[in-house]
Length: 84
Image 1 (cartoon, rainbow, N blue to C red):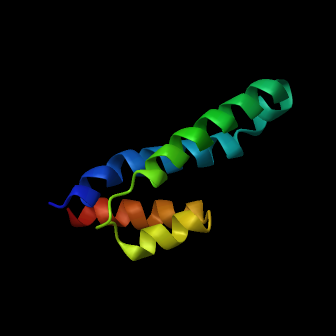
Image 2 (cartoon, rainbow, N blue to C red):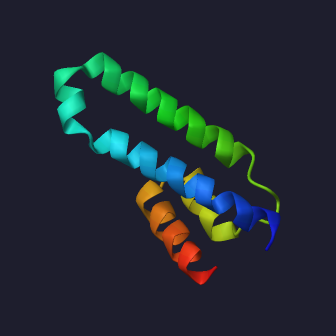
């Protein structure tokens, strides 16, 4: 297992968390400030993981993350988990 594949589970969780926060209409409606803070926190955590991606990370996942195609990134990461 390469170093990059060891980081994929944490990356998958961070991408999923960001997508979940974006989709949380109930929080957005009931407490917009809390929703914004949760979004900032999720984005910051994801940004840290993306910045720390090792050089052997798959170019496809880099592509999705650099373009903020988070649904595609999540699909890719989930498929990667089934391969391991």
